[in-house]
Structure formats: structure tokens, C-alpha cells
Image (cartoon, rainbow over all chains, first blue to last red; front, side, top):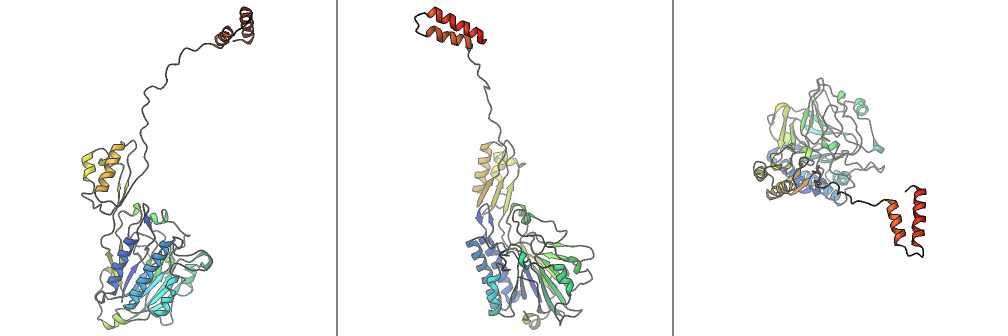
Length: 256
Length: 147
């Protein structure tokens, strides 16, 4: 099973007062085109949050259109797509809604393909190359009104599904703060929300069938910590602030 | 999400990288660049003209950080060159400008008359039936007032 991981699109972002939507559109098109190409073998397309701010006016609507369009294209090509909410996506009005909420009808239209993860969820993704089941567990950033404790949530049960066995794979998709990762200008020039820590201690290093992915940070990196599973960060698909001049916009591919 | 199509339909592929993870760079990301304070471009038009030669600035967003006291002409030259190189937007950060040279800090003041002289001049200029008496009276009053 091949998984494509991306995040932090910030399709409403501006640099020096200029909209960056065309840059993000181009990058998203490149990723989606690759994912739907049968030769690529991508089975699941994962978005790790921060589509746009909900209060960015018409730019928010355009950003949502971009996500809806990507989800429809992927689902139409039979590529599963998972959308995890980030700190920029949440709408703090007590509803728990996010900028990804408009994708919810696609969950019904493309049942089993499109999934919107605005609260922690788990699902069966398919079968890995070794014939073992692959499960996905998400730890999205939630609105204050719908806050949860990721550590408590994960600690409650490491088994996300009754079908899960010791040899199953678990892919964790999160949009939280990872202790030890050096924050970039996404936390100073583009701050939003509060800091909620990734429960890294819940994923010890010996659990080699667990694969951790986290959004939020704009620089592509893999963060290693002794005794723990590495956290893979895809980074943003474009450079948004001058602190990101040296970033190499990327996406991740993982074969499970 | 239980679509198991490709993994089941296709033979297993070899892992694409260490741990099965591969980083794929996106093509043609827009450049964000900074001309830092220490750049030679601020003082040398040849260096300024070279901006955009080594680094692709077409469609780029460029931040200019002139050094304190930078010559305004040099800043304009760098900005023009960056624009000529195709930058989409440029921004010049505020920088400390050299204070204008004040050539004459203080003009020598003209010799001013004292209060006493001024008051007496007024008294002399006044039309009075007894100018001498008026002058004497003003002198006496000024003396009492200590001016």
C-alpha cells in the first residue's frame, strides 16, 4: 500500500500582500495528478491539516474549492483520501466545524474513499505489501469547544479496530505540536490556536509497524527521538514567509 | 476507506527508500529571497547588476534589507535591478538613514537691546507735553524694577 502525505497548504496565504493561491494550486495539481496516475500506485492520499483560515474571506472559499476539487478527483480515480483538521482550520464558534467541514458530503458521496477527520478517528485503510492490515488513526487539532487530550485518547486503546492484530500496521496522522521540533515562522508569522502536544510517548520505538506523520511544521523533516518512533513531517507545498526561503516544498510517499 | 484495489491487484513494489519513505520535491517552487545587509550589492552597482543572475528571481518575492545609512540611490539601484530580474514583488525593510548634515547649527544672534533700552526707546518715541519728565519717570520706574 502506497500512501502520499501532504499538509499545510495554506491556500489563503499571502506574501508581501500577494495571494499565493496559484502556487498552492500548482503544487496540489502536481500531487493529485501523481496520485491518480495508475502508474504511481498511490492508494491513500493524506492531508495533514491547515487548508486555510476560516475567516480569510473569499480566499477561504477558494481554498475549500481546491480541497473539494482534489477530493473529488482522487475519489473518482478510486484513490482514498483522508483530510485531517489543523489549527488554522478550526472555527472557534462552539460548533466544532472546520474549513474541512464542506468535504463532509463527499464522505457520503464517496463512501469508503473520502474521510474528513475533524475529531480523532480510526479506520481500516487496506492491506500492506506484506499482506497485513493497515489502519489509520488521526489526531487532528480540535476547536477549544471540542478539545480532547491526545495522550489520554491514544492511551485509552492502542488497538484502533477489533480487526487489528500485533502484525497490523498503524499509520498515525496528526496536526499537533511535536516536542523537540524547532518551530519555524509558521508559529510566529502565521500563529493560530494553542499548542497541543503530540503524544509521542504512546508510540515506543519498538513498535516498528507504527508510522507517525504530523503536519503543522512547514519545513520537511523527519524528527528522531531515542526510544520513540520517528515523526515524519511533509512540510508545506510552497514557501510562504521569508523564514522559509531555504525550504524545499515536498510531499512524502510511504510504502507500507 | 477499505478500498484495497491496487495493493491487491498489483504485485508488491519494493520499498522506495529507507523505511519505505520517500521525499518527493515539488517542481518549480516560487523563490523567496533576501538581499541581506551585508550584500556587496548595496555599495557596488556591478554587484547590484548581478542580482538575479545566479539566483532565479523571475516571479520571486524579494525582501531588501539595506544596511544602516545605506545610500538611497544604491537602494533604488538594487530595487530596480531586482525588478528587472523579474521579481513579482519587492519590499524594502526600514533602515536607519544617515542624519542630514547641519552645516550651520546656530546663526549668531543679532545684538539685542536690553529691556531698559527698549522701554526708554518707547518713552522717547511717545508724543508727550513733557517728554523730559516722562523719560525721567520711566527711568526711575525701570530702576526700581531692576531693569
